[in-house]
Length: 170
Image 1: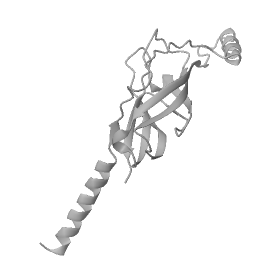
Image 2 (image 1 turned 90 degrees about the vertical axis):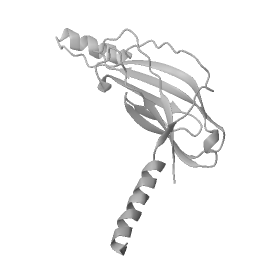
Image 3 (image 1 turned 90 degrees about the horizontal axis):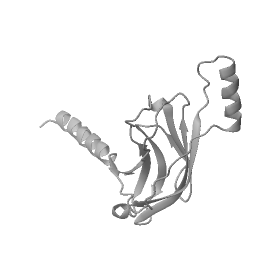
Image 4 (image 1 turned 135 degrees about the horizontal axis):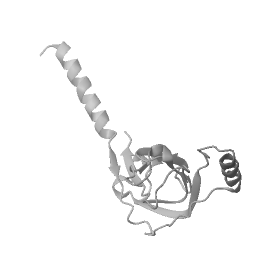
């Protein structure tokens, strides 16, 4: 085999190993307290005024989102297989199969405690919530969520169930 044929093979093996390391593993969050959080959606006082003014002016789209808070949600992730490893954890929001029109109709925002990062995500997307070394078999924190739904969306009820995924870093 000539030297010219060996180099591409080594490059291919390196690329394959790098892509395998970047794969995400779904974390078990069954250690988290299991609660159903009914959310009452509302407009803020400023939004109500803006919506009423827009409707009185004959605007078809008032443009104010509905919001609902879900506070003090404790999240406990089973990370025992990754202790001592550098990793990233992502919060993924699966696509919704309800009456929501598109991913632009819903956004989940949060503030987080402990080592978790604050952020926002839309259905079908992921956002980084942890970047560091996994130090314990259970990685936990408290999230304060804000659900934001566009006002022209019509859905009586739907589930918002985040998934947590881990990516081991080289």
